[in-house]
Image (cartoon, rainbow over all chains, first blue to last red; front, side):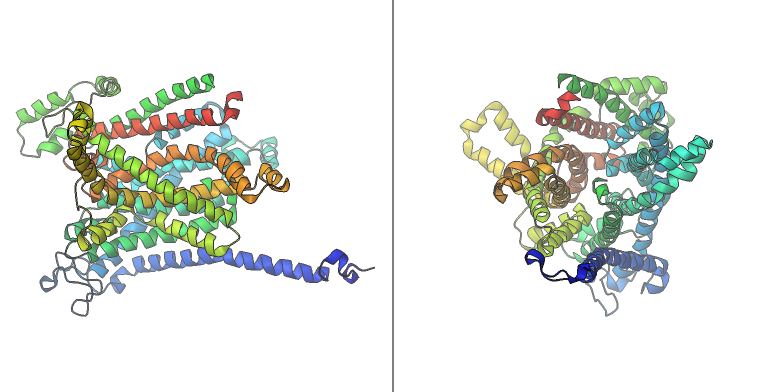
Length: 304
Length: 334
């Protein structure tokens, strides 16, 4: 007797296997679709940011450094052309925020790259070679982890002086211990696989195995988690700029617009409100995308 | 357990030394010397020499380094370059402000974050509750504390004029009165001072607390999800215990252990948060002191503040690890 002909066994509704499968598949698809919504929203926001940063000279209605004496500290909508108002030098706030996107994105992406390039090789070495190499690298990492990211970046920027490059280096180095830890834990699981043993058996050197087998198997997870660190990097950059240790003033960055606007919160709250809102949106975009990607890739990584 | 604690203590010592070495050498990489940076180009040669000698920068690097380590362990960070007082006395005056802010904001973060995280985890099949609380937590996580602080200032200090715009209240008077027993002689003055301190504390504590609550909420949600999928929870349910008992007696207690280790991490985040929060609210404290010292290039002061920050974080992590051993008996058998 075919399975589909079994009807209403013990009070179960009469559904055929084919129908059950279809329903199962549909619910699966529905669930997956729900998972993709935050990724889509996050990606859309990130993409918008990238486009705004790249096309800043064309999108921005004014030059970010052009000063209009007639429009000092004017409220949003002043003169029908300053959409978000103007600052204490009569500069258009919207244009400055648009140009500030460049600094945030540059620092966010570049510093994560620096952290990745410095941290991942060390982490893979620690996890793959084990022994005294691991002990040495991990003690060093623990030491660096004693400093919160902002504090470590603060120390480095103080030592080097504030500029775009130094800020990138400082945040990159401050993120490094996180990448070391993550890469190590990935390498620890990967090295137990049979294909690693096979690679060893045919005489692959440590370096070759790490480069050709361990790293490629770890890279997708590393890149996803790196997305989350872009959010951290952007927030840290804004924090440093806010404290006056970021990109030096005439160049607009969201942090220094906010910091300069702080003196005028009594009369002109729009300066701080809009620049801070831009920071929040940017951080949210990367958090949203990274969070959802990570859950999709491996929910067990939630603690990282 | 004693063995575990002793071993943990021994690990903390090289960590502390290493972290302090990072501070020392980072401050020394500085291109150009601190004296030149502080006095500017117009300083005379003699004045520069004097400054270098005063800071002990003419000694070999190794001697300076050992001297720094030894003195820091005795909490002696030298004298401020700009003001004529010792760094440690200044830190001692600022520390209570920061401590108060960290404690208050931690309480707020736990009061808001724990319940929302747990409720979100327990109602994970109800998208309305779970998704809403997760989205709110994500927004909270993405909100820079200095911006949220400014928004609070605009609303509650400028628009409604409910709370002071700057300052931290007269905490030193409160501590002094507590110390010399004047509390009992002038209770009214004392309560007025306490009220003043609290009045100044509300906005900063909420700004930092609410942004931290987002982190707590996410951490407690995943901790709860982890616990609720364990076998003993299924056992408790299958033996017919009411859901309330399963949650309160079995799930919540076991959730506290992973949460405890997170608190160590959390204090580090909160301390960093104070740097920004204190700057926004122009509130005295270690963080503001650090930022001001860096701005004024007062190296002994900055170095002292960073060292104290690092020491605090390492010590808190140490305490948490020890508490972990106390709460989780399985640690003993390792």
